[in-house]
Length: 164
Image (cartoon, rainbow, N blue to C red; front, side, top):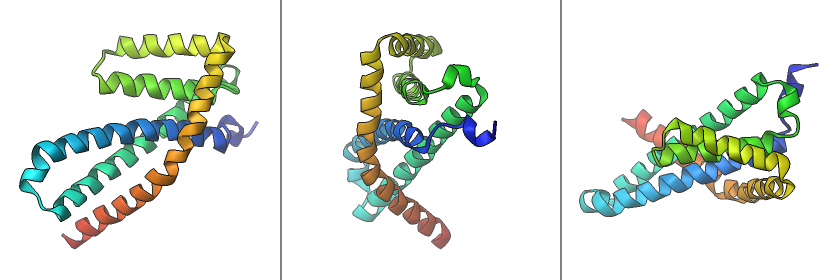
C-alpha cells in the first residue's frame, strides 16, 4: 500500500477544508467588524483599515491551512480501519467541535464530549451523517469568495512588509 492511499480523496479534503474556512473566516469577520466599530474607525484612515483587514484575513487563511494539515496528519496516523470513508464526517465534526471549543473558551472536555457524541451519531444515524456531508459540500461555495480575498490579502501583506 502506497502512502498516497493513506490520504482521503481531494474532494473530501476540499469539503472539510471549506467547513474550517467558513468557521474561521466568519469568526474573523465578526471580530474585525467589532474592532472596526469600536476602535479602528476612530483612529485610522481607510488605507490603514484595509491593511489591517488584509492582515486578519491572511491570519485566517494560515489558520485554515493549519486546521486541514492537522486533520490530514491525524487521518494519516490513524488506522485505515477507523478512518476509511469517514474523513468528511469525522473531519467536519472534529473541526466544528474543536473550533467551537476554542471560540467559546470551553474546556477540552467539551471538545472531547462534542466530538464523541457527534461521531457516534454520524456513525449510527445515517441522516446525521448525510446532514454533515451536505453542510460540507455547501461550504465549498464560500471558497470561491474567500480564496481570492485571501490571495489579495497575502499580496497586500507581502507588499507592505517588503516595502517597509
